[in-house]
Length: 201
Image 1 (cartoon, one colour):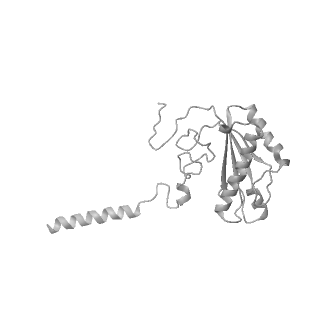
Image 2 (cartoon, one colour):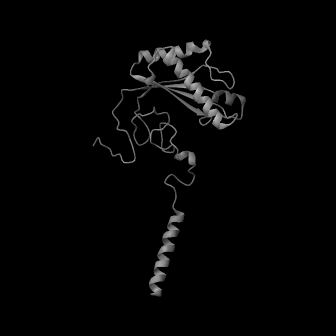
């Protein structure tokens, strides 16, 4: 009986040792933000190779809709008063260019992305970037008559810098609003989830 109990103890210790040395599927340097899903497409950030997927788009297991879905990506030349989100009339011409493109491509939709530098509290920056993106989306809808179903606004705050926030020049680059235009009619890709299989074969 003693030998049997000792054998069970050894097996338990061996199993515990295996558990403690097990590594993450994505390595030991996985951060918590890697496990988030910023663009809400069902694919976590660390695996997502297409980080600007339109909301509710069908994606493959790498988070990509289709290689030819993006029609246009342009930074809108719109400057905001510090800590404000109202779009001044002088910048409506920038929004009109985008509206004209959407009219010429009726089977497309647009995601307006708001970004900030890292000055101030991150929660406030996220909220401000959302308000700025939504302000531009509202002009597209209300002033230039683009259907609301074709327009979405997302505020990313300070989470997606394109330059270093250590310099004034870098901060200026990070304070931006980007329009991402995607085609609606694309290659048929089934909406991916953790239970999906390749249904094309």
